[in-house]
Structure formats: structure tokens, C-alpha cells
Image (cartoon, rainbow, N blue to C red):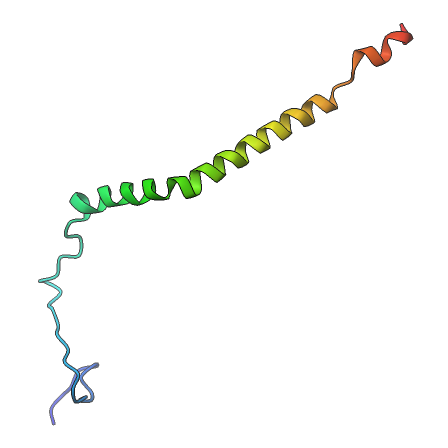
Length: 83
């Protein structure tokens, strides 16, 4: 029967598997020429789905903080009679 390696312990009929040597594989083929532009394209395509709501939330937060700071200050007109 011979020594079989793991993954070759049984035969399945009708299933064909192909293997490629690890030395023949190109794991980072096109990573710089296609990967970086593709990353920018994907980020830009999602910008309006993420950036616009994020910008609106920031504007609401900023206005809320400004109003809160304004309301924390005392009104000098309320204390004019104490002089």
C-alpha cells in the first residue's frame, strides 16, 4: 500500500484535485500594481456611505458642545442689581 501522506489517506471517486507547488505560487503577485489602486478605489466608493454620516454626526456633536459651553456661562445681566 505504501506510505501515504496526510490528505491522501482515502480516495474519492469523481473529485479531481489539483495542486500547485509552493515554489510556483506567487502570493503577492500584483500586490503593488493592482492592490494599492484597488484599495483606494474601494475606500473612495464607500466614502459617501461612511464619510457623509460621519461628517453630519461631527457637526451635530460640535454644535451641541458649543451650545453646552454657552449655557454653562453666567449671564452678566442677571447680576447687575447686585453691584
